[in-house]
Length: 352
Image (cartoon, rainbow, N blue to C red):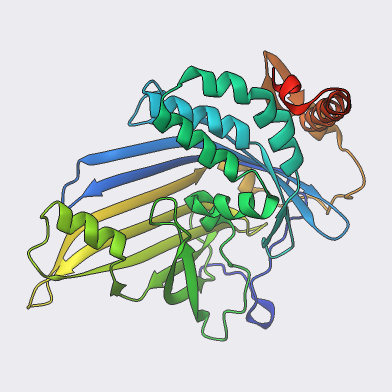
């Protein structure tokens, strides 16, 4: 039986935002040591993306919620701090184009003024220790300029994977040599992996097409070498790392459904036998995939607000539910109140 395929005009994969208005994901990042199947660390959270078409671009409102550590809600100090700061950053609004290329963050002022400056004193007073205060200072430094803040967002795997170039020319062979940037080293700029990216145009049983990036073998980053030598794990063999990423795109919009990334650090003996030292598994699964099986309606106007958009709950704040339009209006009003107060009072008075 012949399988259905999608066609690539001029060998280029093109994203079809069309009527797509939102997508929800369950994300899990798992860390392993050596060959063990037991977790050394796990982080889970939910992400939701709201999509708003504009005349020459698209706005992606990305929200992050339900942050869990090692299978439980945050309760340790560093977990609570991570959750609180996540509430400062998200929702974050990104301007993108038809290739899902990151262009800029458009709600930077609201993040800094409405959230950070408004909540800074309450957050920093919770944990007055020097080490925690230094952590808050480092976070605040990322908020000094939009360009610095945008760079700091690249330390996030979800960010790297979402905006990795997928809508490109795959050539007549449907495979290209390319680079993949992924933040495998904590709080450092993403590492460049060189490899091949292949698209399989056959439609899968779950109504998607698959893109697979496979990196070349490369020497392990110094961060991992120093960590491994420090713990006396390696026996003097050379250490390497590799990356495999799989994107499932829904067949109608070709927007990411499921994403899986597998990063490995390993050594090789004289017989070229691999021994795993560290590995990280990232999985991102779309929720409510039944919608992907129905052909979308005609493209919607970017200038109209549709009835379903007015009814869908976008954000809950202080016990009140807001639709997308209501939340944008609320944030605009809060920012206006802040700027008016700032002209009347000093910065430190306002923080108090």
